Image (cartoon, rainbow, N blue to C red; front, top):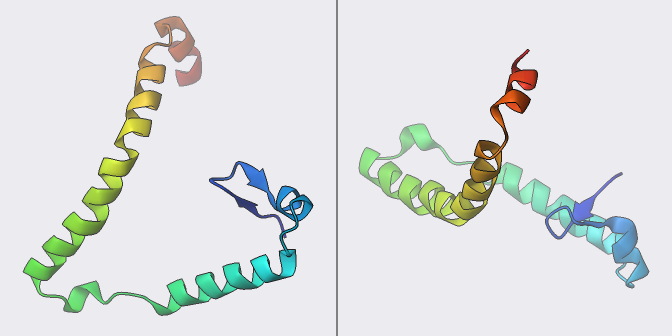
Length: 90
């Protein structure tokens, strides 16, 4: 099993070197995965106004959080010379 943590920047091997019990870590990750599968929302049964508030509180919060990173990568792409972009389009 290949796992990474800390935003994908650290491997499980690095965690093990720091004294983290890998079996406990794997067990906890499996529990989180099970909880998320059991925690499905029945969006089709929600009142539209409640659904709108839910979208604002979850999706919009995520967008606000990720926007600086999106801006960074968008700026990075726009600074690539046009001749380099043409190579990717072919």
